[in-house]
Amino acid sequence: MHIPQIEPVTSLSNDYKSIISKLANGPVILAEQNRSAAVLLSVSEYERMSSRLDHLELLREAKRNLAKAALHPDTTISHNDLKQLCGLSGFH
Image (tube, rainbow, N blue to C red; front, side, top):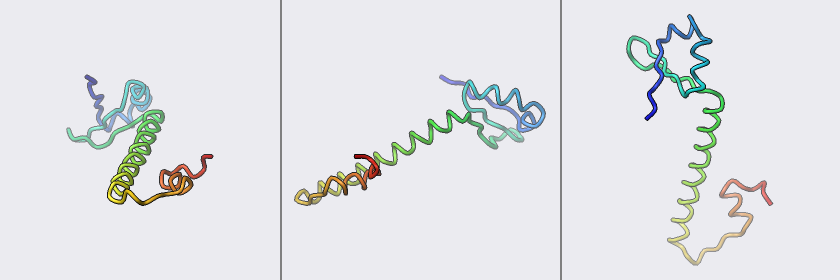
């Protein structure tokens, strides 16, 4: 289990280098008046999350299209249209 790294917002202005170095161990939650105010992520963590979100959105769209296809099993779709629906129109 990962213990969250929590720092007061004032630490960001007083000792930002220390906060930035903590990002190597995961996100840092900034707290203001004992309440979460923001979350800092490393660029690599942000890119990983963004990529995962993109993949999940494609998966959701694929499942939606499969459900539509199940309702209309006699409907056909061209290979190019399928690539476009899946966001793969630039692939050969």
